[in-house]
Amino acid sequence: MNGENWGHLVGNIANLLAPSMAKDHPNLPVVKAEGCYYYGADGREYLDFTSGIAVENVGHRHPKVVQAIKDSADHLVHGPSGVIIYESILRLADELGKITPGNLDCFFFANSGTEAIEGAIKLAKYVTKRPYAVSFTGCFHGRSMGALSVSTSKSKYRKYQQPSWLTYQLPYANGKDCPHGEDPEEYFPRKLEKDVETLFNHQVDPEEVACMIIEPVLGEGGYIIPPKQWMKKIREICDRHGILLIFDEVQTGFGRTGDWFAAQAFEVVPDIMAIAKGIAAGLPLSATVASKELMEKWPLGAHGTTFGGNPIACSAALASLEVLKSENLLENAKNMGDYALKKLNELKTKHPAIGSVRGLGLMIGIEIIDPRTGNPDGNGVMDILNSSLDRGVLFYLCGNSGEVIRMIPPLVVTKEQIDKGLEVLDEALTEHEAVAAK
Image 1 (cartoon, rainbow, N blue to C red):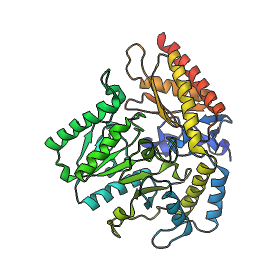
Image 2 (cartoon, rainbow, N blue to C red):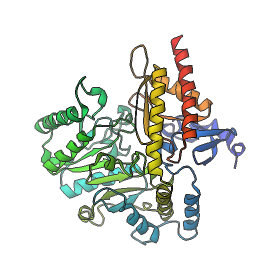
Image 3 (cartoon, helix red, strand yellow):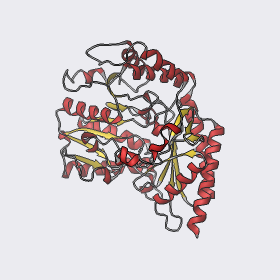
C-alpha cells in the first residue's frame, strides 16, 4: 500500500468528501500508522500528538489489538447483539465493570461517542419522567440533534441546526474567571450555588430537570480543568433535587487523564457515563453506562442498535484493556503528563505567545495568545500547527476561537518522543513570534 495508487485523488478531496468533514486540519495523506507515528504518502514519518483525537490510547496498530481483530474476524463479523449473543461482548462488559467508577456496571454498547450521549440522555429522561437537561457552557457532547442540544463549545455547530428540544446551561468553572485572591476550590462551588438558584428560580423548576450533563475536563471547548470541589458540588446539587448526573467521558476515558476515568480523579461517581474513543483502539465502539438498577428501568424497545457492540470491536476493546493494564499505561500517562507539563511551563517562560498551560495526565492544552493584547490567537495556532507539521509533528487544536493546541499523544509515548515533539513546538513558536513581531 502506498500513496502512488491514490495520491491523484488527494487534490480532489473537496469534490469527493463533504466539506464539513474534508476541511479539517491538516488533511495529511498517510499510508500507515504504528505506535506514536503516522507514515505519510510523501514517505515521511510524523510523530502523532493527536492519537486520532484521543482514540489510539494504546498506540496505533498495537500488535495485540491487531491480532485480536484478526482472530475475531475468523469467527464472527457482525452481531447484532440481542438477536444473537457472543463471547466478546459479555467478556467486555464484565471487564469494564471492574474499572468503571462506583456501581456503574451495566452497559448499552453503541458505535460512537455521540450515540453514547444520546443513550445517556434518553435513559435519564425515561427513568425520571422529566423533560429537560442542564449542560455547561463550553462542553461538547456531539452533533446529532439530541447531543447537539447540550453542546455549547461553539455556536457554529448549532447554526441553522438548532435542536427543538429545550435545554438550559450553566457556566463551566474556568480558572480564568476566578477573582484575584480567591481560592478556586471555594469560589466556584459558591458561585455554582448562586447560578443554580438563579436558574431554578427564573427558568426551570428542578422537578422538571432529568439530568445535568458535563465533561469532567472540558475537551473541544479548550481543555479546561475545573476545581474538584466544584465537581463535588454538582453531585451534591443533583442529589438534592433528584437529578441524574451524566459524565461525558468520551475523551477523558481509558487512562487519558492518568486514571481509568476522570470521575476517579475528581472522586465523584456519576449516575450515567458515556464512554467511547479510547475504548477499542480505533474501531467504532461506545457505551452508555449505568448501574444495573437504573438500566432495569429502561425496557426492551426504549432504545436499540444494529451495529453497536460489534464482536470485532469488542475483541479489540478487550485487547486494548489488557495492554493498558500490562504495560502500566495509566502510570505512564501520569508520569509523561507531569514531565510534559514541566517542559511546557519552561517553554512558557521563553515564549510570550503561550498564555497558559494546563493538563491532567496526557490531556494537555497550550493556550496561544497575541502577546501585545493578551487576546486568544486562533490564527497563531494554525501557523504553529502548520509549522510543526512541516517539521514532522502533528498537533491538533481546540477552544472557542481555536486558540488552544491539544497535546494528546498515545499513552505509550516515551520521554524521548515528548522531548522531540516539544523541541519542534519550541521551533514553531520561535518562528511564529518572529513573523508576528514584524
